[in-house]
Length: 353
Image (tube, rainbow, N blue to C red):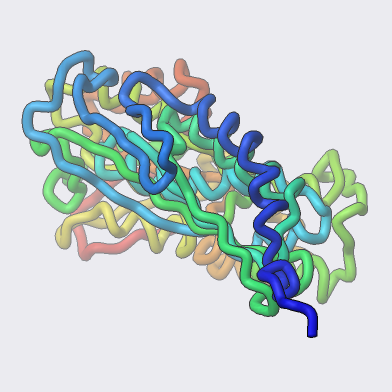
């Protein structure tokens, strides 16, 4: 009887080892002076000080952590056999949450699990994560790859990400304490669907409308697959610019990442009990992908706003005196800001009008 090996059971250690150099190069491009050398590979080392963002050491630091995945957007990557962008989504889903409390991303960790390891896919995935970390100005400090034969469908994988950041205790953004009537609601344009609502997207476009990822859609100006794989926008650079500009003031009052739950389900998280937000739905242009989904699926408008970001990926709530200058700072940082509403006295809620 032949002696069995791990490879006979479906796990090819040699194939993973062959990818390590490419993975390490992807990680190295995210390293800065605060990443300490550690070649044993069991863990990553990161020093907090000096704080390069504020230009001085942290005085009373608070460590902030976030975790998330990409969700069923990965199904689009499988359909297109394109795997170098979903890593950006993975980073975005965590760091965009992290900055909502005023924290600066420090480092990121990833977890990739698959049934059978394919070197090309793995390297593409890590390169995408690396690119997301570069955009978020944080280090890809480490990660884990799990090969689990029989656990995933052939050619499929899943990803999870973990972001760690820091902020000064006195700079922590808590909308429940700061937001008040009269505050201005500024929305930042999304890059499209980002990474939420893809179960409904796939149901409408593939099951109901019988479309495929290779179909060119005139109103989108590209193929459906290219539109659906557009990476989630990372807002770290722009928000950090605002944090720096107003570090001696309590600005902004609140920040909300618009993910699952849409504007109503996420903006409300930044409100105290006595405040309501009125959002004017005509205040910004809604990207055509949302109209396509609503029309082909006959989805009610209320459901669209409850599931998708509808073209607004991040919300910043600022006091009226600073609202115009905050919007200018965001625009200078490369974002497209819109004044989309205001905070009024009332029961804690968000209305789309």
